[in-house]
Length: 221
Image (spheres, rainbow, N blue to C red):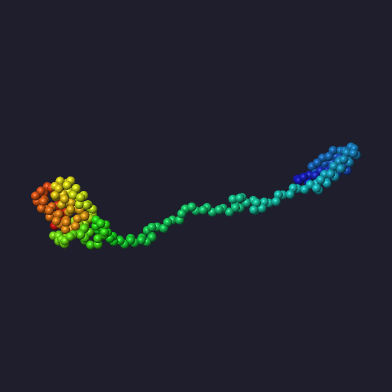
């Protein structure tokens, strides 16, 4: 039973009991006998108050239902952001890529020999040596050109080559001739003449002529 119904029942019982003078048992309530008119009047007034209160007492308004937007959780209301992928895209397989063709070999050009004066010679290494005062014919031109190329490569002057020959045990005359044969500042004719002297002196004192000087001299014969 609600509050309004309870007040209504109490008001009715009080009014009926005041009218009949008490001694009433109704609607689960029992009222004793009232011996004085003042109590009846007071009871009647209380009954009227209960009746009036039953009409003004209303049940509390139910709470309005929560809206879908406010009831939704923040996780449901806010769209979940998509995680950014940090993985790099796979590199293409190298086996599927076309392999570049190897570059064509480049032909290397050997620099022209340089004579002692720094002038490049386009011809034979013999032409890079100082010019002879007279023509000379070698027994083996190919060996003479190879020996001249060796002279230009070593870059020794006559004095330097002479010192080397002397350090190898050659006498002064043989050392001088070996220096001319092994230098790059002697003419082909001078080398030819010095080679003849080295070969002739080697027959007399073979121990004074080093194998290198002998081979170089034989090339310029």
